[in-house]
Image 1 (cartoon, helix red, strand yellow):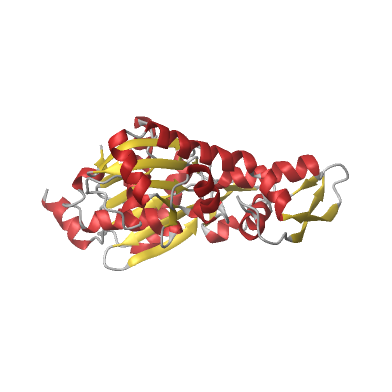
Image 2 (cartoon, one colour):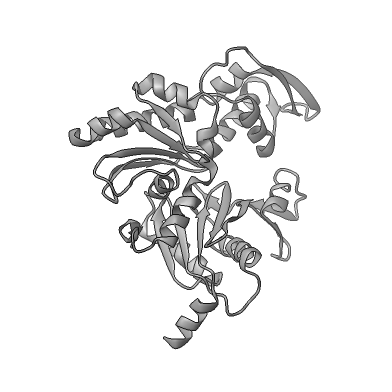
Length: 341
């Protein structure tokens, strides 16, 4: 017990958004101290970790056969336990240094639909990476806190958290989730939809990084006032020869239609299943969008058109989950009810 307390004395407690696309870490008294892609580059012959985070992401689609660029998180949960532990260890080392006395408490945001096996994998990975005590918080709850919503009040709040691997729609009041749906459709599926569309309709192969760049620059859920034309380069499916083609924003929007409408349908289902007592609150207050996927241009307009509700964006959608986990870390007594077993 004494040793446990001493380890805590030297530690600086942390909060982590262990996302499919990016990992963010919040340090008490300092704010967000790390924001890096959840990617690890590994030498297949030796098993050696060559790069983690931003450096490793550059390997995606560009690696020789002996090197693999791995995303150890899939749909918001751990797909590769060993690689995830290596990634968490690297990120914790980066923010806390190599002190053998530093074993921080760690609050981690996890999807609301996470299973007991997946919870255990997250906890064991974090413990193996040097954390002391692990506390889990559901991502939509963390996103709501990070967006400044009154999760402790009687009035219901609706948050739509769109990450890289999951979209979570939650109705929250009195520190609890009255309704929540987690679908494994989000930003990554939009990237995959762009890759598939270009391959099928234009016979052009592109990589994951290029698809993401197209989504960010030209992707939208709602038509622009003026059409946009742009060029994209890749490899011809049949000949294997590099080529460039011209696309429009409409091409990209139509390519991403399936994942976009899956998110809209999840929001509609949540509204249909909301208890009448809470529906009135949501009618007045609308919904809040959080997560990197919420930055897709025109998504707020599409949701407003389809639901008739007011739609607002969190001040910083990309960091809402880690900021909320950080607030719960700092005011752990006040937010004690939001942590999950």
